[in-house]
Structures are given as C-alpha cells and as structure tokens.
Amino acid sequence: MEKGQISRTSLLSKLDDRSVHNWMRAKIATIPKFAVQAGYDTDGDPIYVGRVNRNGETFPAKVIPRKRRAYASWAGEEHVINDVELLSGHYYAWMPSIGGIIPPHAVRLGRTSEGEPLYVGRCVWRGSLTPGKIQPSHGCLYFPFGGAELRTEQYEVLVQPETWVASSGHEIVAGSVLAGKDADGDDIYVGRAYHGNNLLPAKVIPRKGCAFISYGGQEHIKHEYEVLAGNGYKWWVTDSKNCLPVGSVICGRTAEGVPLYVGRGYWGGSLTPGKVYRSHSCLYIPFEGEEVLYEQAPITQETSHNSARLEHHVALHFFINFSI
Image 1: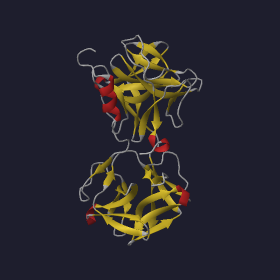
Image 2: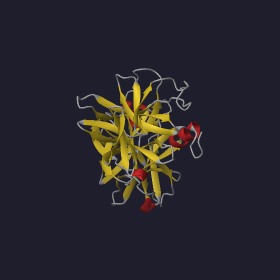
Image 3: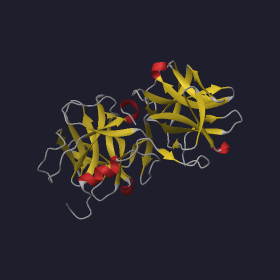
Image 4: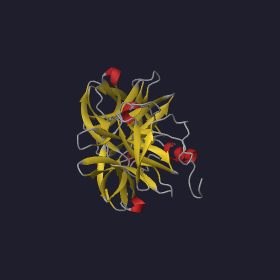
C-alpha cells in the first residue's frame, strides 16, 4: 500500500459504520440543525419528529421545545418522556394515506417486539398537526394526545423520495450520498451525468471540481451533473451473478432505455462508484482515464490488479428494504 492510502478495511468501516437516518440525541429545549418538523400543537407551538426506545421497542415522539416536553404513547396512554432522539436531515416530505397503506420511500421508525416494522406518520387532530406511529397490520396511525393514545385511519406518511440535485464545480450539495474515497482521500459522492443521450452514474468529487463517468472504454470528465441527496441509503454487498436486490437505485438509462444502477468497488486504493447493467453481471468504474470492468465475484476473491479484493456494492434505499 502506498503512503497516504487508506486500507480497505478501515475505509469501509469509516464509510459504512453510520446511521442511515440521522437520529440525534438532544436536550428537548435544544433542537439540532435541520431537525424535521412534524407539525404544530393546538397553540401553534412547533412539533418535531422524535423517537424513544422502551423495552426493545421504538416509539415515535412528538417533541415540543417551547414546552420543554416530549410525548409518546403506548398501552393506550400518553407519556411524558425526557430521553429522546430527534430526526435531522433534508428532502423529507409527507404523503397522504389511509388504512395502514405504506407508500414507497416511507421512513421506517423501528419495529415492534414481534418484528413488525413501524413508520412515521402524522394527522390533524383538534387544531393540531401531530406525529405518531403507523402499524400497517392495525390499519391506522397511533398518536399521543391529551393523556391518551388515540388512533385514526386517515393520516400522512413521512417519506423521502429519491432526490437528484443539479450541481457543478466545487459545490457540496447538502445531504449528498457518500459513495467512497478517492486514492488521495477526497470524498466521492453518488452522481449522474449525461453523455450524449445516455444518463450515466457518476463519481462526483467536489474537491476536484468535477464528476467522472465511464463510457466506451474511457473515463470522461463532466462539469455539470446531478448529485443524489438525502438519508436512507445503504450499500449492500452482493456476490452472485445477475443479483440486484429489490430496491436497488436506478441512477440512469442508456440511450436505448436500459436502466442503469449504481455500484461501487475497491480499486487502486480508492472506493469508487460506477454503473451496473443488470444483464452484464459486472461493474464499470471510471478510473485514471479508463473504464475499468469488474467481473462480479465473491468478496473474498483475490485479483491480480494491485492485489485488490473485489467488492461489488449496489445502492439500496434503506427505508424500503431493511430494518433500522
């Protein structure tokens, strides 16, 4: 390994040992930056999205800083809580739903003790817009209000749809999805850019002021591109051919309309994203002027190129497919 390069193991642990949701432990009176607002109380006080863990279960919390209080509900009652985590991040939205229906990209809050996933929701109730938990099998939203745990079958679901933000130069888009590190340690983000009529996955390196795509056996530099932004993404290791897990993120399309996915691989001292064709069983990455083709292989397989161990990742939307 050359001086200054990061080992594969330490690089992966630094990048992947992170919460896909930015739940921050905070004092109720001190709201973290970019805290997600859920609504307002009957007197107009802002309410923020929070959560609390109790006996192995995770419950939503309505956090009201002006009252220096947070509330959660279970067993039919509303409870005042002091130890709470707040959700912080960008590009969240609320989508109307009913009867336990969960839309795509819904924010998973946690699971019940029986393993059923729970989602963040909110509803209008007696002059307030208040958050709670959606339990799909019960067909409703549960929320704390007036000392009780109430329920409604009409509600909104907190979602974070895939968000692509136009960018260029050295700009770092808020909430950019980190893909890896270049050989010199520069951060690489998930992006995409046009090359002719092809919309191709790109590695975006703000410190270098550009993005890189691979096409026709070569690496190409792009100065205008889009960056994937938001929370809720996870890299999933796959070691079998033609295996793209359900929920894999489509990053672009060929001129003929073939969907392209984003993957990443450890190569030449970097952890670099590239494009994945479902039918090709490989990953193409832009690297040092060339388009490098990686045959899909088990993560333990050794290759002759720089003695690098292959690792093929596919970006998954964590909200849909995995537990928190």
